[in-house]
Image 1 (cartoon, one colour):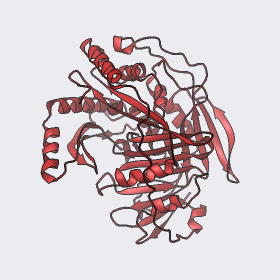
Image 2: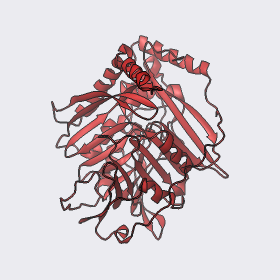
Image 3: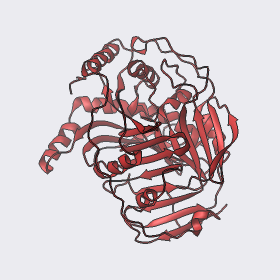
Image 4: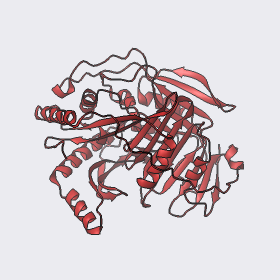
Length: 469
């Protein structure tokens, strides 16, 4: 099938936010939003059509749980029961279930989904960051059990929605540097007949009354950090990314929270998702890329090492210098680079994986130590297999990955859901993919009267970590 491209010059600023803001929140939505300075990582924002197919991933029944302690070196390996995956089609504005399947692994699920992609022909006149006819959506962290074969003690309840992928037959693509807007769609898609109206500016809702929701105490957090340090001394792991959780009823809508994020904390891999009929919304200001694949070149950009922005240029430089010269930060960062090189080597041509760069990337409120690792995807490996091999990202688990996933479960004592999973797009027939890591993320579930929000945050713990820092 042919791809048709329409170009709109000099559209309104934040046009994709304006388009979404004027839609009702009673339909599925996905937005990949780049904010902050325009860089090589933040050139496009993209809004897909979600009106064709979708695949839902659910927690199965009969999951066997671990009774071992990863912190004591007891990691229970084993594949969970096959996923419950349901294919649905949009008919007259409603999702109608067509088929339920039981893939045994994440890459098997993605392979099955790829059979429903639309093979397309490009005119070659425009190089697109995304190809219509592929899929996009969210893979929750808990799907990592189907890519790493580890048994955990604290898993989602049977029937919990773990992820969703929509087939996207059309995309709005906003080019931030040039200010151009393009519509890229399969020939005959309804969006091609639409005109782009003038939209009123997006009003950013006011911040609600601040509250401190419940979380574990600082003393409990310090105790768990000491547990991790004891485990490192015992030789069971090197570093683990342990997180804390805050939960509360919301006064307002998740979309309002996302709009505030785009202003107060713009980020290159921000995203918004709303699964309307399941009452599940995710708003993220992520600065981190898990994976990018294009023309056979696969790359990842792990973050490890963070400092605040300074009040002025001199203070900013001092903090940046402190980060770049910290032996602790650099040792932890290099450990993560080695982990990502290992993960990429499993899916790349031998000898092609290399460390491309290490730099400090400045955002609105913080600055990060970031490395690039890339390689040439093996000719026998699909884009879905590559995504599964890297998922979940090593920067939010630790090293070694399977051990730390088990340790995280022991420490946090709850499934992570969307947090530290990924949002992105995948077109296996075109060999394209781009996925973030869901940090700096709010997840919301609708209740009888109000939305209920969960925010989680964590950091890497190593042998010389201090919980007071």
